[in-house]
Image (cartoon, rainbow, N blue to C red; front, side, top):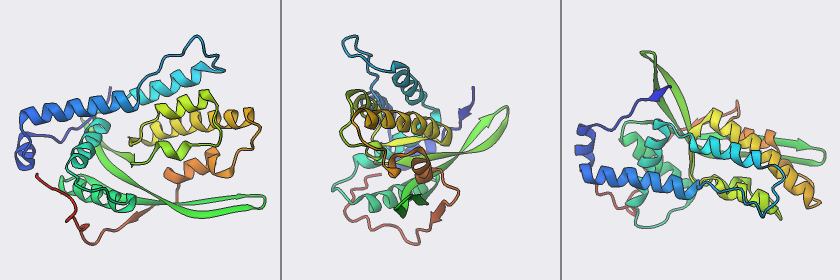
Length: 242
């Protein structure tokens, strides 16, 4: 089984002012977040799910958390814990990237060009998220692995008038996603298929922005570009104790 190289060492902990007790609390916070935000729900015998396999497959994907994913999620939750005020999503993403860079992670803001053209409908736009390049150790050699970070992940899959089955799927998604391209691809395939079924049952058409091709282009487009951050975000509204 492949492992991702962990960066937390004694020197880094000392620099960040993290004691062993605080590190244990942080690890527990990550575990609690994963268990709460990606809580495994049981297929209720009273509810007639059309395809319980979809739910179980999604849970398999979500519960397979690598060391690197857990590490980056832990860092983000640690940063978030020190925030005094809420800030708008765009600035929050910039702030998270700057904090990760301060901790010597190869993090950047990414902007994917999104285009959908269906009959009379045409949409061109951009979608911004964070990606982090990690080193994966396998058989004595290292490989670069891209982790995608989206701080508003669950809402991207919302649909009108969802069925109970689809709502349960949606509720099982994390609000903060940290995962590989492969993991994200699996989630998109399952959710878009389920969204199509949900809309069909409600007598609604599938909007172009909820089709798999559109959802893929938000995070996995070949037109992805890195956004340069020339100066640190103004952090006067952030309480930085470390």
